[in-house]
Image (cartoon, rainbow, N blue to C red; front, top):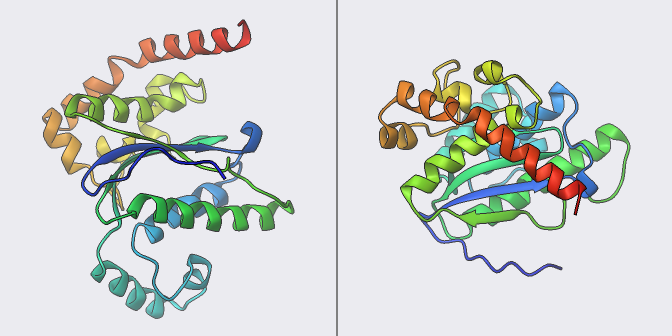
Length: 224
């Protein structure tokens, strides 16, 4: 099993990502994207009594009661940004409790892999054996990484730059107030940069440049 060199510390912020085995698609249908988001929302809290699949089958009143219990236990992580792509995902997370990020990611990936394999009649690992994580060292890096995450759909030519605010599987619509925030904490980054308008300008001013960087990266991989 791979050894992880990075140490996850409380109140530190990390860029977390993982891909499907051999870059195979991990999202293809609306239900799959929704399932992953629901798992993120559920497993940002400490494990307690039920798995998500059990929780999802509860009657509405039981779900509401259990959700209150979860919230009372406090978050493992604060989710600052995310983007789901067909073959991978990006998360920007602040760890709030010891081992919060590894616990959350293990639960999300295990739960989603079981769901995906059952739905698609496949067997075996879905994700690479261990997710990647990089600690963010200063405020400037936090902003740049959040922009990188939110520009991912356009830099990969999955959507047009002008359509980024309506890309459903990213937290950018919540930062631009195109969608009501759910489990995303937008206050930290928006306060840092000076509000929604400033953040929108910050993201879109570098959209074409990030596309060019992506093209160069692909060329270097294809032509060693």
